[in-house]
Length: 142
Image (cartoon, rainbow, N blue to C red; front, side, top):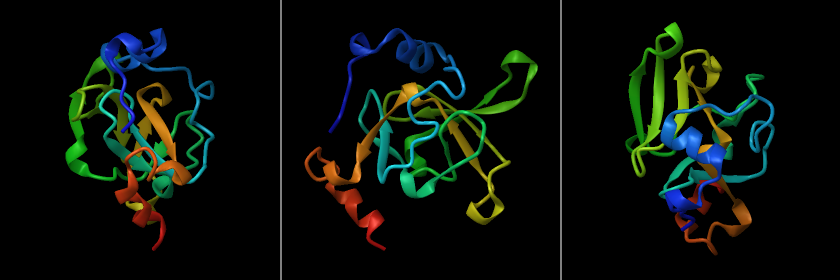
């Protein structure tokens, strides 16, 4: 499994995951990334999202219609910046991931998990077995 210690995080990764920050839109690693694979929590290595559930939302951050496992996602009320939003955190590391909104594609369930690239790590389909995520290969062979 891919895991990082907090001391290994870049300044931006630390700001996002530990201080509830947000990376710039359209200037992050995965906003326009559509390779086949899964996205895991950068700190715990736990699987969070799959490329099968990623969609283009034009918001500037990676957007997913659902999580791989709802038990790995914590949702909290966020009233910062004078807004009412639902914050999304990783259960495995308590890292801030982003927010979930109800404006996703209706045909995909209507949710948009708007996630900071700095909080996740992409694992390509071809490396799932090698990196200890072999159980997720079946998600792509439907």
